[in-house]
Image (cartoon, rainbow, N blue to C red; front, top):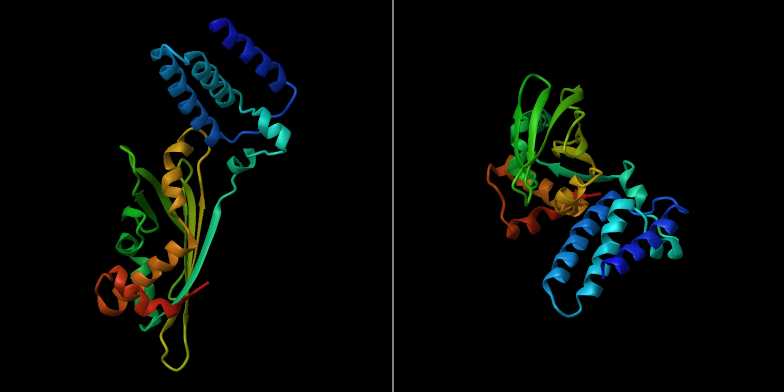
Length: 246
């Protein structure tokens, strides 16, 4: 049994050396986890254990080498997902408040978890630096430090995470006073880059929730908070949905 598994892995290794890596770090981590589970299951069974162990061995090898023969045949390569390709989210909303008041609300970074549902807390540590903690289905939190990199009172606020962040990210908010006392236009752009390596498996679940639709919902929540001082419920979103656009 062990000899068959060893032979199969040797054959896989011979093929792998001919080709470049075509499996992303996230998939490699999942392959290692799944392969180990199959091998353990095979060791505990009296029937069919060889197939389970062979399948587990193939997954483990896929995780260790980053090479998949099936991907090679299909012309698939997922490595590019680990080379800084993130997501940029944009949304715009109009609020019935003076621009100066809207800007002050955003400048107080501790306000963000009140309407950004993926955030647990934001704490300012000095004039421009802050510490962020995101919600995550993990024993350990996802957190980072960030700096305000651009600021124009009542017009622009921009921040970026510092090196060493669990998840690289940046944000920019632009404010425009509308004519005829029609309030303030708030234009938001958020950028997130998922981490590479095994840690990517841990934060993948959080990253899936960071969508443009989620940002629009966050801005609807922000609109109601600043206009009424109340945190909206799901039923309240429809009342202000006309104010949100791409």
